[in-house]
Length: 215
Image 1 (cartoon, rainbow, N blue to C red):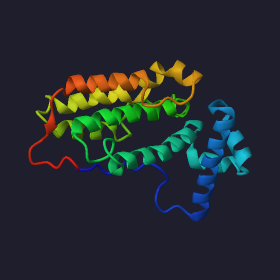
Image 2: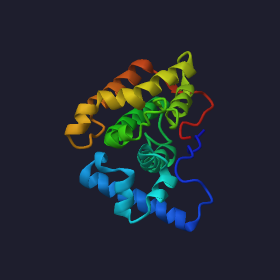
Image 3: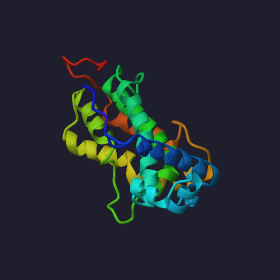
């Protein structure tokens, strides 16, 4: 059973000019981040660089954090597609435990690679999210449920594993590494620790009888 894609990104039914403005703003924001880092990306600076009115930026994103949330949404879609239809072991076709290990490693690499954008996307007026708006928790829950024997308390375990991958815990633990070096690969110590965690949690599992391991 594959999970539906979480509906990130622009809403349906946008006017053509609104779509063009959104793409222009996001493209410009990425250019600014590459050149100057996230600190220089403000509502005023983005509007000026993109050659659009400040009101357009406010209508599109609402807040400065909204700019970075939109950037993450785009990249989240690409990540989800790899999980839902990409090659195994991240995509369908591998043993559930193997997919769980691969998902965590890929997710850690994704979050570390997006560290600065993810931190800038946190709205200080809102509760700090821990994976609530991503596919992580339902995907982990699905994979755990397909192992045999399945570990007890699947819903609670999925919440705990999600917290190991998402939100402020990973962002703050990795702050120094992400700020001082290039984007890490899946050999990062956090990824290795995730691999060890899955191997300890699911030392000898197999696909639940009657289920297709390639789904």
